Length: 93
Image 1 (cartoon, rainbow, N blue to C red):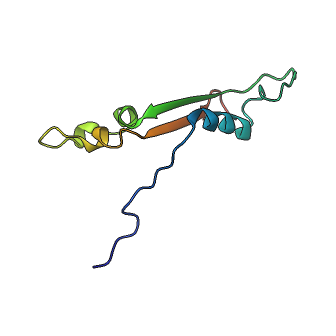
Image 2 (image 1 turned 90 degrees about the horizontal axis):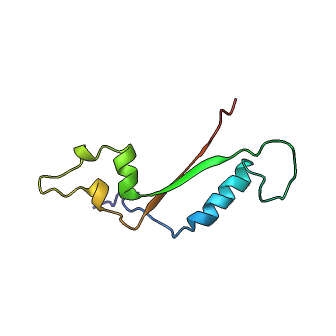
């Protein structure tokens, strides 16, 4: 029997507060960390952290993954995981 590659997911513990700070710093969307007194408006990012069930409710199709017994792996599995979403809050033209 040949084992299929990619059959296991690997998750790492994440400090979401720190991830948000790094995201804002590296993307150049906020200069509040620099103490800059520039007259240019500070660009902001909208960030949100959702647990897996909330993310799947919002962006998945949980009605299509429910089993006959009522178990829904899309919502019931991975209760200790989260999704980090980050988007600019203005038009980026």
